[in-house]
Image 1 (cartoon, chains in turn red, brown):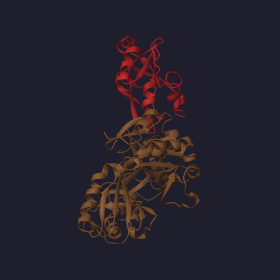
Image 2: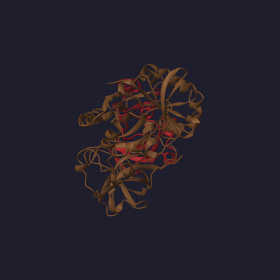
Image 3: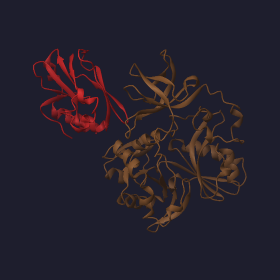
Image 4: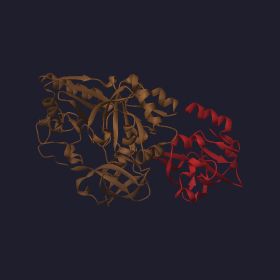
Length: 129
Length: 355
């Protein structure tokens, strides 16, 4: 189970990158993609959408099931990953890179401090595995 | 939770396990559902379906008994043959669907869904008390059941067993041996592909499983079993069929033969069929899932989805739904409500896939 230390995690299995200015990139963890299985469909928010922390803002579907994705922070959707519509399998293949879901222009980047670091998130995964 | 004789093998293979109808079963192995699905479509997959219920029906009265207890006509089944059937209840619906194998003149095997093991066993036992010359025995724990499915299944199995499989037709069943291990084979399955179901003694199950895997079969879990059966247009009890289903309003109306059967008094002579079971293809962006509403062009609910997925083979979003009969003709445009959005769909012929 790969959990990079350069970013933060929500217990609901999203990751949030360190902010670049006020922009934070969001995706799902390696553990989450493995649990879901082959991703075949992604529904993303629209750029400009306002989201609150813990809002269900996207859906990732595998062959078996549909899973809600929650915003780890409040803000405005800045950009969504345009490659996922044609190639949702990028989420399985590269969950921390090419499989990113959307970027948020966050209201307050200090909210990242309330998310889990890699070690704390690893404990969450170990409990669920 | 119950186990099967192969539970340890699944765990050693790294399967993700799930509680299915009270049995600890593999949902998928490391390759994932799509990989397993496509292995069955392209070559050969191997499933452990030992959780299934098996009921032996024996005696000189067995044929007449099964003719009465089941909707398909056991009279048409010769020794060494099998067919799909259903078990009616007294309220115009179903207790289960099942596969019936005639092992010999007076010996039959009914394979039913694990979740309905007790209901089916109780029904047959109750009917048998009223009948002459018939004995019903639950033998579910006496058999491990494996399913070897796919276009490569026959060639793979032919190299291992004593029987000449070229002489074995679809729905034939016969006893044979694999390296000295006694087995019963049936050229049946639940994937839409050619293939075999293999009944083995529990103590022999691991050896048979390993021999088939070493010969090239890909282990497949219940996840792929579900996507394969859906693509092949087969119903699953608890989804498409339930205790209120009149099968005459489904694509499987052919099962119901014109003859007396137990519970007939509770069935209308001609079913009203205000709704019908249909195949759906979602043409807009989205995947149908069980419980999603089906809408007409005015946005009114006209039915609901019973099973749905993306075909790992074609990437089409497909499913089954019960919908109002006036919209149930193949080709009709409807919509599926997916997370509040109305997504276009077409009533489709089943199966969605033919080998």
